Image (cartoon, rainbow, N blue to C red):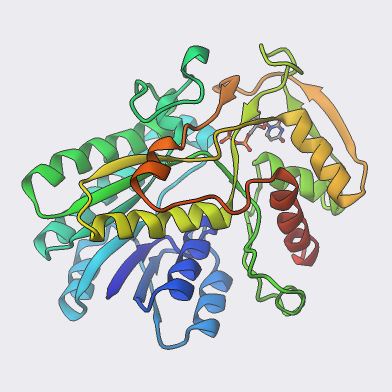
Length: 344
Ligand code: UDP
């Protein structure tokens, strides 16, 4: 079958595309405007699967180009990763976020419904929960949706639109609410790393904790800040549920199989049901890399909830998903090997 993947030049999209290529015989049409994605990721997918990956450089909200694509290919399912996703930037540029994440998604939905797409997998986020009450941790899918920034709001809006669309069309969907994803492909080998053919996180101006800490460990940054050590947690720093990118990628495959087996539209958290503090993560990065680097305590970052841990019971119960890399050191090691090979 042919799947359309939006935004698969990015981190999560490229790893998920590879999982589908490795484990199914589907053909992928990838669309990405390369604003934040990397051509290199597409090149890696195409080098490994030359006959099954087509790439079109375009905006996923371009109705005319979408229509042309759907006319010439029988697209059964869509994996929608394309989005703007920096929380702080979303606060500064709300309209840009609503435009890209919501208005462009509506354009995509119009075409999907018109051409009879059966399955839609949507990249959602734990940011839809905002700052959940500590009594609700680990957070279940039924927890109140209360995003605290335009990024989280835009994702919540798309979930609501999907919910309404599923009622009036034959399209069924799964929205996956990602927690903190990190790590690099477990399929990376020494030779792929050396040839620059490995998949991992290539962010331009990294803000995510593990990536930032690894940039310190590999000498690309002199030091880093810990944003707040006065939270109501055991060591005072925020706790997050860090999930390996390959387990997150596998959740998409499980979600599609769930729909193909007749499952109803659903929303699933994707995480490990346990959390680590910022200090624990930094200690792990130092231990795995064997490199000590400078950290300083800085003020809290706006909008950071003290604790965010996923309940993954529903995903495990409803699909065949099972985590394979639920170990912070494994996550960090895979990312470290990639970061060392990645040019500064
Ligand atoms: N964090 C930090 N220093 C950094 C980057 C992140 O202390 O340089 C903290 C951040 O405040 C949060 C946690 O690490 O408590 C995870 O942040 P990240 O940006 O990785 O993911 P988020 O949870 O915001 O999606």
